[in-house]
Image (tube, rainbow over all chains, first blue to last red; front, side, top):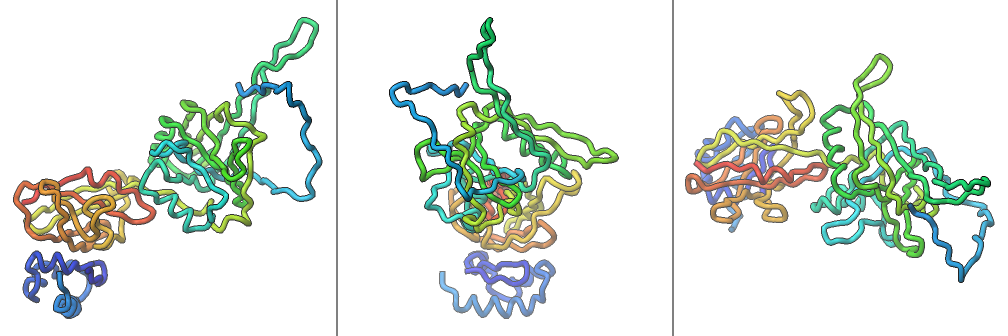
Length: 54
Length: 317
């Protein structure tokens, strides 16, 4: 499943596989790149990550 | 060539009553090129049962198999095409005997376009190609085979006759190039048939063929790589960026798994997140792979030809 936020499409499978499941890891990977507020993006992505099952 | 052989056992004259209503064929304005035969060995064609709408046209333009794809020229200019007079033998007393049909040629100009687009047309000179004509009101014309009324075939181009000539802009003319070729001698003018615009719910002159995309990889780390996609147009040192891809447009292989890149060494699809970090530059994030494993991807988006992208690889760090 992909969560599209601005020009970034966060692939939940990839995030889990890469261990990008915390706000810190998310910020390290994408801060300054996605063109939208990183906090808002993480809020949306983390909500979907909780529901997501491989 | 194409000289009729009279069937002496069944001689009739044609029914030359004139219909009250006919499709009014207008000035030629464009063409749709395609391979004469597809990769299955079948002639490309339009079946009269086909619904000729925009979805049909878009599917043809974007067909993954280039031999089944349609290549639309858009608006062409100064389109000419005449059949030369038949070759005849004149006897000493002046009697004439037809020896062969004259050759029909076609010439058209693509205006306000440069050598970059011309380079694409030059590729039309090698394979056996065919075309449908489009007139100014978007009627479409092809050819039937003289008996099958369910199939309209594109008109065959004489292989080896395609000639593309560039011309510089002048004070009174824009830059462009001409396309010239001969029609295959097997094609008969009397077999040309027209599909009326009223039976076509698609924009034949306004729809664009695919744009080729080239790829480069840079800034490779253990878990990211920047994929830069660009067109051949624009400045040679700053080509036009291919913008607007999203994660779901990235596949491991053509027809493979969406939102993935490919580890070619292990033949596996690796989930990816794509972020367009600047125009045409996509940062791909993925789980760390074994260093030196060969990686690639196959983007897919209507209107673009990404066929060269999977051939560009990067080695995992």
